[in-house]
Image 1: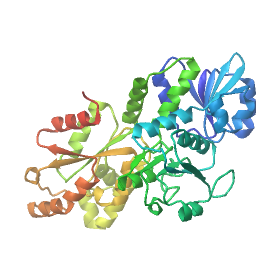
Image 2: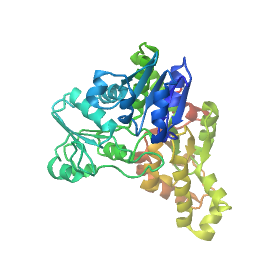
Image 3: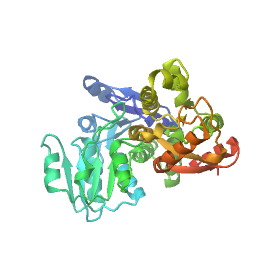
Length: 415
């Protein structure tokens, strides 16, 4: 192989698509067991590789040289082969530092907690110190390797200002849960999670809900890849190029989610938007009807609203499980369930299509909006929820094409 990524499980990795945008070389994903790692490194049949979980520390024993920063951190994620001499670097450090600086968070003089005890936790420790943190503690379920317990953190360090998660908790496919309970910390200013799939973990969403600076790991991933590529090719990459690649990867991975009242045009707008952007389109109402084998009106009549909502939530869970750049049109009541909203936000940006109630026509296929009175009641019940669960509110006053264009412009597909 020329260049690539080695690790134990790589099915979730975005690295190949990032390095393909960097161009100039082929990039492979190569899963290795611990038994295979030694032979791979000794054979040196590569020009350069990135290293991920769980080999960032173990790989160091096979290197001829280690960059001073990587040596101080005690972890390597980039290896370059120069004429049979293997040299290790840690571009995770530069990537995490870039993520924090881009967010605007201040670590100077702050107490920082790092969740995890693996190689990336050492990188976070070093980065926090480099950014001027007053003190940094690593947290682990088992007190070892210089870590303290989560119980100690809850008892003695509730004044922490910044939390950095380096554990895989919340990572696809097990996307639920958080490594740490943010409610225990009253003085938090910022939360970072190195997990990038999903784009926003439960930890990041909980921090955002509190109004904190909160970022997932995608920017860090892209930055470390850009810096690794510079080592591979013995060149440099501009910050503008880094930002461009990050925006491109984010837009390709993030779902566009349309919410709003029945009859507000979500499906029509969604299909136009998906066709224009060449993205997959999904309609949760259509998926529910397919799963039930009957129209929504019949589901309500034969099995009741609770059954419909269960099928709707199952469809949303499937659509939201992985970042895939889909356009998703929701049923009118989908955002009434906070769990649906949480799952959609893992990998999506929610747009509320705010069409005037006077412009929406009641129809018999909408069980909760059969007539004008019912439609008005639903609108009054839901309006604040639609606004509160949306990342953007789009006023719907023109035709579907103009609404689709407005969403595309807001998202950044148009200048």
